[in-house]
Length: 470
Image (cartoon, rainbow, N blue to C red; front, side, top):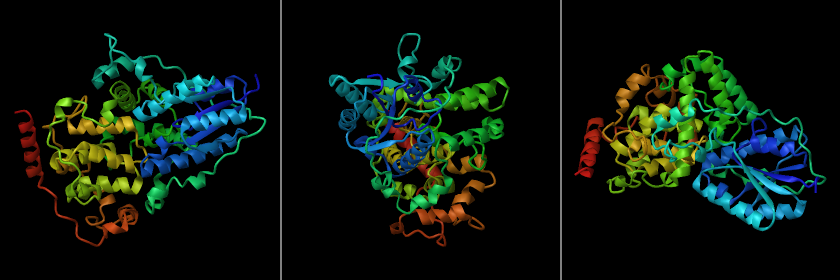
């Protein structure tokens, strides 16, 4: 059985370098069958992340071909697909990288149990996070509920060195039949928005490495001072690639640590942001309810509104608050949103518009090409006030004063708001090409009046908060 192949089930680890599962499997000397499954959990992804995942799968397939291998594509429930492929190929086992989102975790646990019950080797590996969520513990053996102690616990924790990509991958004597990626039509729900967002993407492992090199070559030095300014190009933009595992979080950690040792100004803050992502996965593992319910149960009675017409204006970037609308239009045009803008847009929806954070979470889940279930849930609950390490409810971001501080020349707002720009640029106009025609939006129309006055919205939110505490 020494020549029996291993099936490598790829999901959010679409890379060759620093991939523990791939490195360990290649070291066995066995033939390898790389596999991607379009299972119901993957089918359930929102429009933008599913489209972007498909592009990542396509790029990864090309990378495998460069090593003389290939990526087999199959559709169906994961366990059934894997059992069928084992029977077809005589594979000695199935390997994959661990994931921690509740539905994905339940799927993987069912797959492992089913394979082992059938007498098939099933092995999971680290690789999606720097630190395994279950391995970071408090002094009392529990999990961390607050970010700062978590950061102190991991900032000097040893991290294994990144592994190089394999030089070659052994192929099986006969390749199993593969489905065609184009037939899956993973970008179907993007409609005409795909053509607008596509120029802003950096797909694949090589593109991710180039992004990291550019970031380290200069923007890192300004990162700590200017990362909150959406008008300043100082962020790494690697969240897109981290989402699909086109670059490992561990390799970014080592890059940040080297920069910190060199005394680079932004290195410590960059490491803290990587640790914030780790904290999100840590919490999602230990408290999976954070993905769908208030992390603080005492918020269950808060009178947030469900979906409503004001929330629809928020989704369309038509609230009449320029900083908020610029953020929402950036999302439509680029598939991402600057982190400071996410905070402002989230605060406005949950506090000025008193709308349930899950309404915003669902919209991001559908529209973000860098959608990360842990970071998305943690971020929304932070800004709403219902989560761990939350922003106090009385901390209500004022979009106008935030714009003065973080977009002082109005560059960000004019970049995405055609109605207020002196000469609308291509990105401001692209918004109207991306949105559904049924919205009836045009750049030559007047900019809308605010949904609610900022002072009025703040007082309404504080009053609701006060009633909650009485």
